Image (cartoon, rainbow, N blue to C red; front, side, top):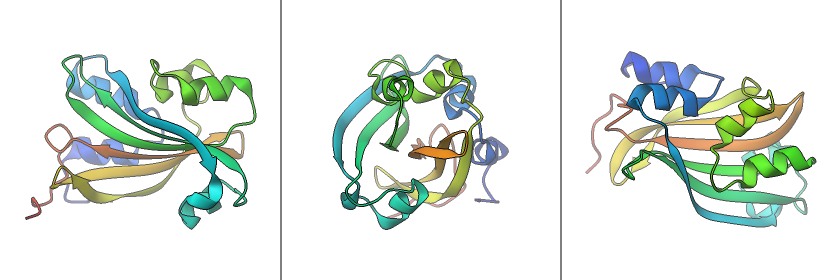
Length: 164
């Protein structure tokens, strides 16, 4: 888990609670949600690892959403891939909202601490190295969403060199 990263980055990556709350505390502003793409599609189009984490058969339909959490002036703080399977209307509203970040919706439902981190590391952010965290959101013991968050390296430094 990026042991040479700054302490703030290690805290964000280790947390099993709301990343939205942590990022808002870090930037000192309320973040807004920007949904960039959202569709329903068959689980067979997903990576096998995501299907396994969400206990999906290939024909199961899932919501796939790409979004960002942004500062009020429009700067991306995180870019997110969300894959959701849901059985209840309350979770459907959380994962399809175009105004409320998922973390806030989960807190409203009392699920803010129901996450299991399944990966951390580095990936790309506009040809720069950035930190990422992947986790599964749980409703009880039932996996309901896979979320992969990439963090703006100018806000959440990862301690890695810039890629050429």
